[in-house]
Length: 379
Ligand SMILES: Nc1ncnc2c1ncn2[C@@H]1O[C@H](COP(=O)(O)OP(=O)(O)OP(=O)(O)O)[C@@H](O)[C@H]1O
Ligand SMILES: [Mg+2]
Image (cartoon, rainbow, N blue to C red; front, top):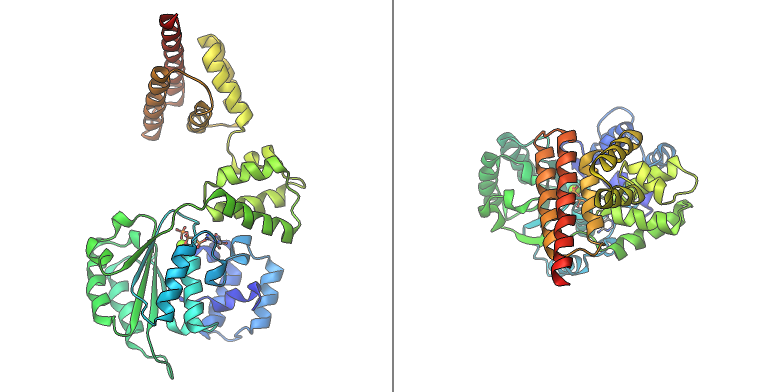
């Protein structure tokens, strides 16, 4: 089956997901087709044509179809495969940061269990929209109780973004899981496992999806670059991988945005496209804070912020990364890190940018003094 067919395989979704945000019209029609409702039900061929015409976002186009295609989590997919082979799939709790393959894995699992027409056997609920107690009680219950004709075994309920469910809904879910274990398996997906009630956690087998290693993201990015004929430079690719921080969705989305905006994607194109400060600017800022006079440095940074539209928060993050690469005595480094942290916190609770910039500059000056004292003391 080609990847463009995947829209047809989408499970009967009870609410919108990322696709509907990206492609409202296509998703609407796909859903119509998937549910078999509406006047003109679309055929698979029409859907494929529609997807090609509208240009599917790359994250969807290159979403893994099978468990083997999920990168970097071989231990998890191999365990799932064993569960399936033994015919003993437990309730699953998949957790970890965004864009690491949780939804993809569970959809591939459903496809592996039921084949392409898996939507009849799967109920996908997105808890971000429907997080009340009614969803748990009504939709899951009625799905669990209806039988798919001519089929044996269990059905799958996918509860995406379950960490957004209310505590009351989670308590209700506890009972529902127990009541329907005979013919339903639950796949609970979330980013923050500590927001899932311990009683639910203990009913599931837990799998942690860690951020993807840079090498694995690179392999996938290279595949997409080659298939889509993207013109990207070596430093552009390095910047893309650095910015994606193990989030494959972000890597592919940024790549697609850059491809649309630039003929040739280099480092500054990636930073421009994402609104992140260019490391060269950060270096200039940090160098100035370390060696220039207070006033000179303040003026330079203020000018740069206006010219490039940078936020102090971004400069702090950039300065933090940059500090890892410079040689500083431990005492000054610790002092600076402490102040970077405080400034970031004060900004996040509404502190003024101008005041925090002066505080940051002050911290740099004292850190430099500290380091000079330390060096003089050693002599
Ligand atoms: N391990 C992976 N292997 C291959 N592609 C991946 C992987 N993880 C993410 N992707 C790509 O990123 C996109 C988003 O992944 P997915 O929806 O599975 O993330 P998620 O872990 O469910 O994130 P969220 O927590 O935000 O829901 C997929 O469509 C796919 O293209
Ligand atoms: Mg997901």
